[in-house]
Image 1 (spheres, rainbow, N blue to C red):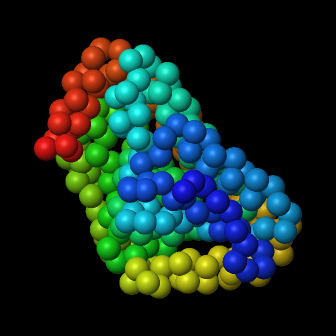
Image 2 (image 1 turned 60 degrees about the vertical axis):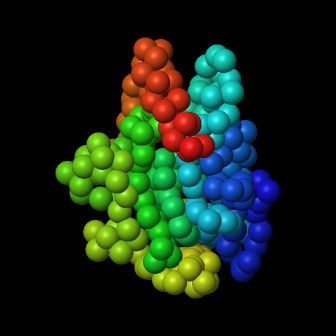
Length: 249
């Protein structure tokens, strides 16, 4: 259990997240993930990173139960900062990041894949932001990188999900494959990228980030301010408490 890094092929680093049962990450794990991604990017022998997960789904966001156990705001602040660091680590990784998405990709998972350079998904994968049902806000910045503007808003307001096939139709998912073929498909794409000159691929990543029309770090940080407002006003706790009762009923 945890965040691990392996080298399945020359020039490729595989960063794997494993937090049963649903990969809802505690505060420490977001920082661990950020550290692993940054370390992989700094490794001059790495030309592409694959971000994957074990278990039933890619990522279910933050560990809400951890926040509910905290009588203060330390866990909320930690989760917000940890997510910010992990999302930024994907975006700022010195080499391209390929996300291999299985099952559900929710909340913080959208922040990760929305900042990735390419996405390969299993045909059972679903993508969404159930934030309004969880007493939170955020990651609309990243969902807007996956779907058109009005669809993003509808998904956000309704907490509905979009399938891997739908995102493939919008051009944000590179390939959709059966679950058993997901890891191999992601590694195949990563291997194609890793065959490029290592110095040039790093320059390419920096150049593409440099022409990005949206500063994803600043826009996400802006969103987080409203999450704090929802918590300070008591709205977030009221919604989270309802979610907790529904989840255990």
